Length: 321
Image (cartoon, rainbow, N blue to C red; front, side, top):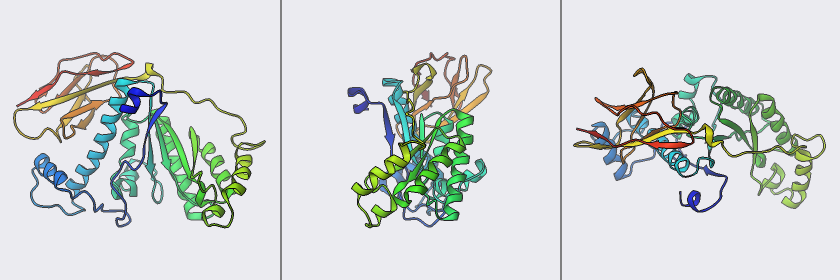
């Protein structure tokens, strides 16, 4: 927020916004056993003792903490500067899912507790940059690359959130990287990103050639005549007119601030979305139905309010018993 408030930046990118690696393939995640997290987990859920890594409630609670961080950062950024883009580099380990059920069984969701599909669907991100780091010359990995692209393309159509396929150029030869650009475009994604510029192809990464030898060649293949980036394309900041969000905070007479289920209700009083409060009692929604809305936590409901466009509307504190 210091950067957003004090500098004319185009965007804020998240990286490693997840629990760490070094887990069994497909989970469970073994991290998060610090005293603060365990104390909050027990307080918010009523659990006792120390949960096992695969405990479903513990797993869901940890995953929600990451989502809370992304949501609250996005709301704070948009409240200060609606035209600043909020982006994330997201995990795509293994094969790609074909639907929501497949996503819930995927390695990113189970292994590093990163629910980036929710971030996309709830509007927390303006751009989702998948770290789709696959070797194009390995048939299984080439298939996985296409699967993740297809999954992201459906999300892009469903939500309007830009989807970018981030390719590991350091793992690929130059032609493989070019192939992945074309495959990304054919899938209909809004963008492709190449990582890492420091080692721009497999030869440099394996110390067979130098960066100085390879970069001019790769540049021509990507942006020269007949290349996928032969013509420049304009990138615009998010349109503030599309922003319409609410944020708020609960206060409690007793019990924890965090882990409270928060419902967003439309003009007819029907639930249209839900989230959870973070450890400070904060919540928010970034995709709202037209017209007035209400927020409900337990048996307590706010007054109806019609959020204005181009801003994050801050609701009065919700006082719970």
